[in-house]
Length: 236
Image (cartoon, rainbow, N blue to C red):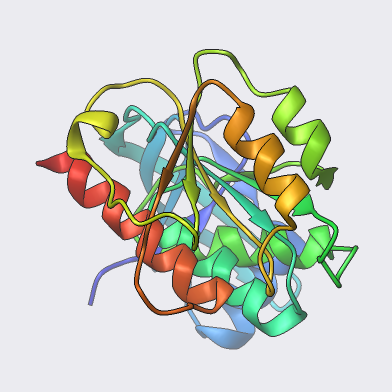
């Protein structure tokens, strides 16, 4: 069985020891029931380190970082801008977007967005767990909630905006994707954007509208489809 992987946000130095957080201590002692001498891998954007438990009690665990097993890697250049949806589908989107390698998740409020808030503590826990499970090093950043118009107005001028548009008949072309420029995929709310919002999106000079399906997809389905399509086209 492969070692347990846990996200460690602070810098790691080989041959040093560290006390685990209360949450990690609970996980190691009560969930995984590890013992002194057990191995754990810790990771962050700087790489991944093998470690050993050198002290373990009910409410205190200390580990020694032994050696770096994986160097830091170049992050993906794909972001996800997603109109907020209800709790369960939103958590599913956070998990799957992380597994598919996005570097940033931007929660959007549009005119037809029913949900206006996001539990950021819960959201960050979900993306960290998804990063641990998917063998990645760096959880995506979750930015503050922003209104659609502000999001469009504040886009980096070199940033391509891939708009999953149910009114578009054209598929995505791989030549639109195959470069290292920052790419943002925009997914609309249940019920789609209003005509006025769609106009704002399409008037942005770097917007590339594309069709995902002849069918109308749920937000979570559209998210997975769009990210998978961009990832596949970029890797060709």
